[in-house]
Image (cartoon, rainbow, N blue to C red; front, side, top):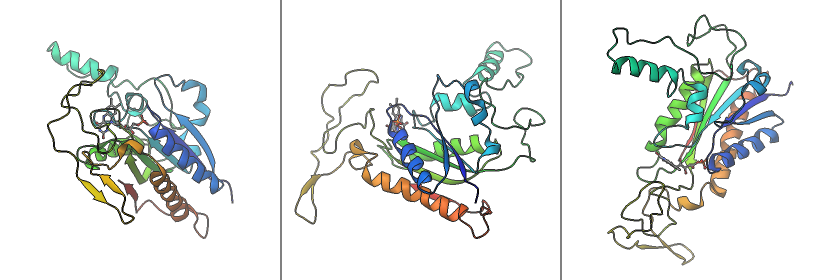
Length: 274
Ligand SMILES: Cc1cc2nc3c(=O)[nH]c(=O)nc-3n(C[C@H](O)[C@H](O)[C@H](O)COP(=O)(O)O)c2cc1C
């Protein structure tokens, strides 16, 4: 059998998402896959690596990002969105603000990578002649207040970025990642009453009860959590590593290790969302 190829792209600020990406890479390598591992950042020089970017050349494409303010990182947006957060959005808005009669703007594709060898008939239009690799999207996030509902929009956003480049997304993975924001306290430590981004945040504790204690089977006592993900401070850790590796094993075995070498069709999903 020819070696399978995966393009594994991720963005990261504090390296939580990078840990997951590395666990994914190790698992693909265990199965003998060729992994192209690519960090997306504001400084990524797309032109320099164009030969490695064509989705046409891969069996699977993975796209991951941490969550900032409910959304994927700006660098991901700039690379994949048709004008979101960029020149097109600004132009349309300024036309509207200035009450020009024509409030539309010509779609300008973001400068940077080309994801497909064949050109679409026009910017943004699907090209149904493209080969369709399968896709996976993933995120690490705090989810300190409501849990997994806080990551669903970003997973869908990442999925849309792949779908609009003719990828069939069959897997979603999310896990908690140590947070540096208002929910970023070790388990049992009282959160602060006020949180101002970029400040020291050493003001008074929140007016809230002390955490109750829970007794484990071996008698150890542990404090309850003020936030949704228990002990988010230590994540992603061993348990998330096991989940990440099991997730990729399922994708590889169930979709690609078929009796005749033809990948299974994208009719199902493999989900690991916590
Ligand atoms: C500025 C900032 C904003 C964040 N906003 C959110 C958010 O809206 N929702 C959420 O669940 N987590 C949020 N987080 C937590 C991060 O998504 C989480 O720590 C993630 O694991 C960071 O990944 P990274 O280490 O790969 O950068 C935020 C973190 C930072 C630093």
